[in-house]
Image (cartoon, rainbow, N blue to C red):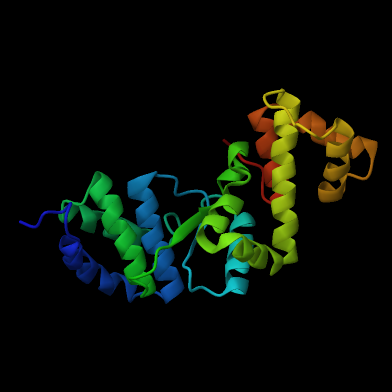
Length: 240
């Protein structure tokens, strides 16, 4: 029996068995189906949209994909889509049949994503819009893009799509407002007036009433933050 901790040869039969499933879909869809499997066996957060990014992907396409994630409603993912969810479930069962569970399952699923993309030698990242629910993730994309592509790559990707740039700015401001309202962190070097000014720039809250509404919403804690986060994205308000 192959030592699964010193060699990846045990993954080859899994990939071979998965290929007929991937071939049922366009490459981009197959990649996200495989990514849904990875999320299912890893962290289990499959209802929040994401995209999968490889180093060789086109910068403009990356920017467009990131923007699409931010504007896609919950549960509009391959794990719940009627055309793909059965493939996701089949691949999860495939891993189980090969005794690839737990950390080994996540490791094998990572290779499935690479195989679906035809980029077995590239390391990828998935960008999931966790900040629509949790303010602590508001800068996660900036950090992850910088780790994957460097500072210049981050500037290039965000700069490739003005709508993406503005939306990411709004998301960070919403997080700052949440923490300011809850008094859980300080904002060193920035006065409340400065924060309000930046809020007006990003949210176009051009009236005192509008700003008061944002403050009122955020005064409700996490529920208020989430309501505003979904509004920023143009999404239906969360029901849970």
